[in-house]
Image (cartoon, rainbow, N blue to C red; front, side, top):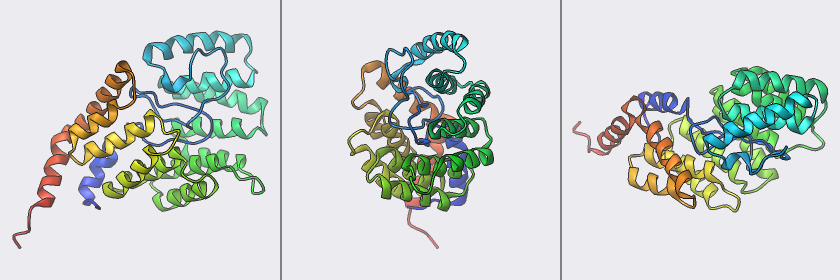
Length: 280
């Protein structure tokens, strides 16, 4: 179901601050609260972290940032500490500081594919999209292509409005890693950004059904269902398979996203109007 250009514009404005695209590789960023996006279904090697960052709440993230900041001060050239620190800084909305950290890590490890990909993600989060594409491209190698890098490239292209190129990258990623939930989620959200909510829901339902699908993927499905006016169903999805605190955080996030620009009423009214028979 494609939607009109004005409604697509509203969707783009709504999703501009949403936690939608999962920017591939083994880095994280979109917590169950309204932080920025995430780079993979996994997390980088932990540097004294008690749990994966994607499962942390805001209080835990703040504590983790303080702890890793101390470790970073002691060992600024440690690869894993630098990656974790930049990752948590992004989750806490400190994109400029995360980029500065990743610049230093990239100087120390200029040929490390994971470092280059993380650097590209930091550039994208800081709004340096062309630079991010170039950096991710340097991390990719034709003889050993990495599906996570294809997906990361697609997420950046989607942010640039180059949706067809983005979907080509997601399909390349899926050819290499069939049924990967983070890539299916990105492909679904690509259709959201162009206003095609029906196809978006199809891909997101497929993503949620895969082993390894996490809260970010369910949150994206909940958002798409809510955008179609099925609010009760969206809240059920947002609460599914989470502890009560995480579930409530997801529902709060969902309501916040769908209340922007009065979008709950606007989108529901637009959907209702589109279903009325034409009088012409």
